[in-house]
Image (cartoon, rainbow, N blue to C red; front, side, top):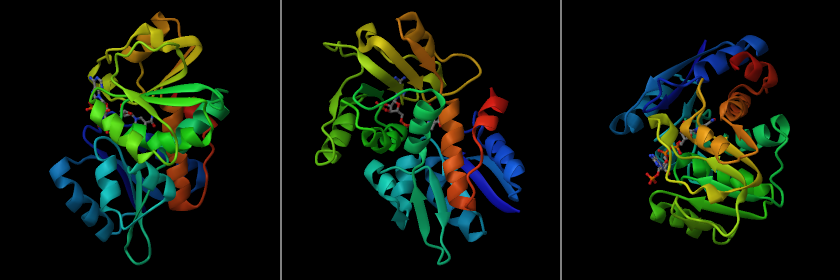
Length: 269
Ligand code: NDP
């Protein structure tokens, strides 16, 4: 049995162990997958020891995605653009490899599972943390008409804007802007839903026929999902589909097999 885990702080809410055990059952791969709370001071030693002891791979969730990217010996192009990683493994020389499957997971859920097209649409991303960074490269690849990043701490959004200068012209600002026109697609990549909080948002951000997507998933609608529904969003979705899709991308990297995601999404719903 090869050992895998998701690490983060907090991590108790994670459904990743269940998802990966369903993937393993489906594909016949022999893996064990746990969730482990790892605090910031413990992070570097934990990752080193996990792989030194023969661990097969780690998924990384908040707040460590940017920190593990910096620790890696080699990162994929999409992880380099994001400067954040959610998937780690070591090659045969024990060199630490990092990739970011969040963007591929989100876009696959939007396009294939939900039929939401990003091309030529205006996209708003709320948050500028590891997950916002992770989903941006894949969103930009879909050729949206415009992408805006709003964050509680504006400097963090501006930093992303500067990093993307030569790649894509991002707009940035604080969360409570009143835009001239509403957006077509709004992605909540803040961690506010975990604390049961709602970012300070103006209803004017919701455009006609707007799809609102919370990266957070839970059995109950999140505060952002309730707010979006009450303020005229056409479609309101949680991040369960993305969670399963990004997990499938990680499983493919680690095991060389892409599991079927539809049956797993259905089982979790
Ligand atoms: P980070 O800790 O890296 O970043 C958190 C972000 O949320 C920052 O932009 C922070 O703003 C903002 N924020 C935190 N609290 C509030 C608040 N009360 N009001 C407004 N903004 C707030 O976290 P991640 O980016 O890694 O994760 C974000 C969310 O995405 C989590 O809920 C996570 O579970 C979810 N997620 C879901 C995935 C899925 O597959 N469905 C995959 C990845 C993530 P500031 O910069 O000002 O601190």
